Image (cartoon, rainbow, N blue to C red; front, top):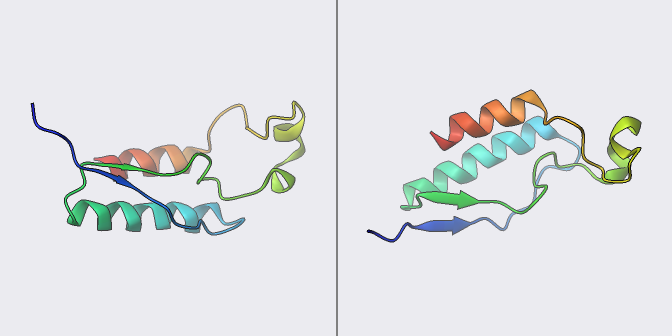
Length: 83
């Protein structure tokens, strides 16, 4: 079994701009892959790139700051980037 090459990203997201943050994830993932990474990890809550205060009221109702379902673009873009 070979040892996978892992890249841990430490970079800022684009505050309050989910689409730009997702584009940044794709750019950083591609850069890491060019350097040989087989797995790229980002900080927890890197996407959506917003603060709890920016979340819609329904997301904050339980105090978690998490919506019931992930935003569709985040999921589809992450899946495409992973491939």
